[in-house]
Length: 262
Ligand code: KIV
Image (cartoon, rainbow, N blue to C red; front, side, top):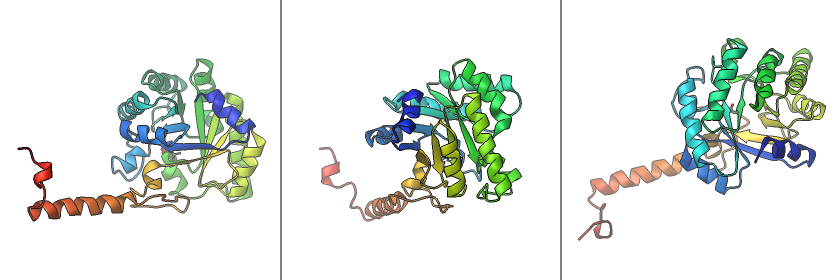
């Protein structure tokens, strides 16, 4: 999938389905399931690294996971998330870091922020780096936002989000993630811009949806936001399997004859 297919899907009114992946194994499974776009999200800081938020994730860590995903992906659009402080300080630094993700195999990058990021988006797209924006509850701003809270509930804040979306579109973003905002705000944005909106906690009117893979598989349950629907309960399954293995080793049942060489 290319960013042109991604944008065509909106015109064709076909829902876009995006999930995160951080390694080759899950990338292959996600592609087998027919997923069109994979986000190498900095959410890996929380679900893979076990940190309380995404702020400490580094460029080197994101590049490593991007390489794992990009080398396993055969069809999906691979989008790499730019980590905190890889694009905020200056446009020049942002462009250089974005370029490293394309060299690592990503086909696009994602960054958080509104109209203030428009110059970064313009500079990247002008040299051939497709950029996805991210508005609403932007986890890298968790301390400014006072926690992981729904954004745009008041009319004036909703209007700012709409202006941000238009500014990012005008700067050349090929799509936008809309995170944790009222359905009506996401709907207004989706209708006002011609690039696809990908919702996470932004209701059903977005052009597509994204979920963190470990949330949708029920692997990560330290904190489950209202917008997450676990489609499996792999943590429970994993616990059961590992406990059974432990029991069988302790009871001398594993390995049995069929798992032994003679
Ligand atoms: O890091 C991430 O996984 C994300 C998604 C939740 C959109 O930014």
